[in-house]
Image (cartoon, rainbow, N blue to C red; front, side):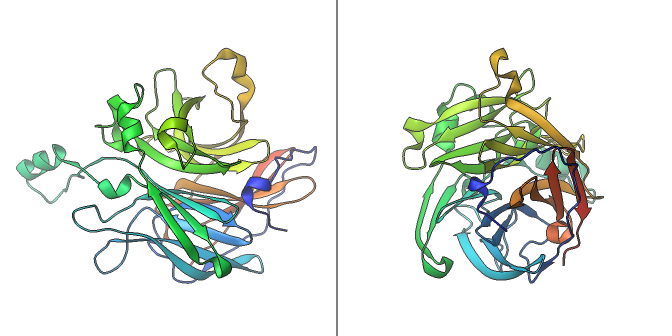
Length: 337
């Protein structure tokens, strides 16, 4: 039985964790090595990638996959953003959330420093090292309202750039590339009409990382920052459950290659009185070459619930299904094509 993620409670019974059956993704997956977001729309698995595709590398899609036994097969593509040279070709999809008939898709709002090229001259690489890419296309948050047959009947978008630049905590990080502890939004979750945006960076002194809570229709008036202490890690994804959120945590930069799964009750952990707000559920060990990037709650039973985690950097995301119960978390490795 599959349920929409925001209705799923956290059930930690006395039963031990049991690995679930493997599953596969079938069909033509866009940017198959770069899957970075996942959610469930009823029985449909929604995925997104942080790289644009198409002839001009400017088409940014989410994709809907329907269940096929224990597997999933591509059902439809949904174009979220088509950029251009001036506005930016890439949305850099990092998070997807579903609530009711609405799908939220967030771009990273991040800057990037150009990569060094081993074949380039020292002078050229110095120029690349000094070049920070401005990507307006990344600074967007979309709300897609669905009608019959999951067709988009209303498309809305806002940017969080003004909020970030005017916030006293976030503003100093707005001019810093994401992999250097600059602004980098990598998660979005929806709960009771509110959105929660999880930041991979910045990680602040003491190990605190921000979550921005807001109302999509009045972002500047409604937003507030909550703080979590993930021991120096940032948020790579998050999903709403009945008694809080599941958080996938990982490094700000590429190293250390360490990932953890937490339960968070939604309270600010900046004060000592809320130390119980976070519970570590498990360490996550990615497959070779992979980075844990997306988590979604798939189904619930009387004593446990199943989640899926997908890994950026590997074709098809090499998804894994996990079962959480009173004994903790185990995984059944999956295959993807």
